Image (spheres, rainbow, N blue to C red):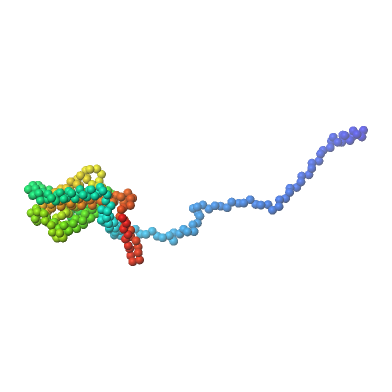
Length: 308
């Protein structure tokens, strides 16, 4: 009886849940780091940058007279360098160059022997037609012909035509350089003109007689050689050399030069023109020229150093 009552009470009893332990406190909690903002490059201050007020002002543009003066100075310096290169050029000649020089001397020498015969033939064949041709074309080798490259040069500059500018510029320089060579040779050789000696060869060195070489022929071929080297195709070079040849024949027709005079002038003009164009083309291609002049500041002014 007592046992049954105990079992009945046990069957109706509910279990009691265990108490939850309190959370364990954490000592000195570490806060998570907060990322600092990174300034953008556009807003980063540059300690070396100048403010607009401190920045140097742009130089004022050069006046037209100033630009012209700069161009004159640059051109003068170019002439000095080219002249030095022209003087020392034979020192850089190879076998082919010396062969050409020898062939040119042989041509002039052969014509020199035949000068009197050629002058006699020209006198017999001279006509009204040849005189008209001479009157219409001989100016190309004189002061009037020098204006041709000057006008071409200025036209190329004004209209921004590099081809015309280079032709005129090189032709002007070739005329001036070859004129100096011709003038010096004339004064040294002192050859009499055909009309002065009735076609006979006569020399008085270091005198006012200036038949050899022909200045007209020199200038005409200086211009023609530059035009030929600076032009594409065959038409313009052919026209230029034809005009130069007519000028040379005019001088023989007018009996102011012998055949060897005009041949020597043609060689001087052609060699000068071709030399200058070839040199300037090397500079345009970025190659170092054979002769270079460097201006060096010194205590009392400027010094020039020539390298070749």
